[in-house]
Picture (cartoon, rainbow, N blue to C red):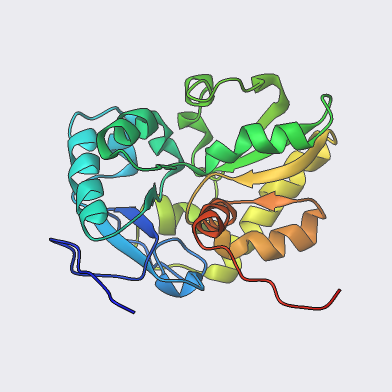
Length: 243
């Protein structure tokens, strides 16, 4: 087989390019920023000096950095681009236009699909890092989404998640955060039994999805389910067997 190099491309063998916020958080297995989370190679670029606060404040430095680092990923062979903050949904359209390849920046892009899975009287419960920053404008970036069928609970009043992932202390207690995520979600579902699926908005939360699913007994979606789904569309398996 004859292989041809691509001009300017230094890395090969990956499909997913991931834009990572500039954070001081341990990226444990299951987190988007930990390469061992995936069963396939991924390529990273850090968004220098771009934080969640800047994203939600519509800071003018965010989009140029997204485009610059997104172009680096494309130049080095990424076939599709994601990122590690659900609030980057605000920049989905602009980055997609700039890069000219498939872009899926936010785990919230799964919401229309999940809602269509459920009956019309059923809801999706969204667990977000900070519910004070999560408003209807964010959901309106996707059309159509019935916002009356979306219940939102935040982790901003927790102790261990807040300390590690919002205050960025540099230390993370996985077991304690897992307990907090389960408690918040169980309480949300108890208050609203019409919730029949859970979506974890924050990219720090996939490490806790298995324990959460065991606790709430509902489908749980997160960034990892979305990335695996998109990756599978680029790399189809060959089927072998007997009829």
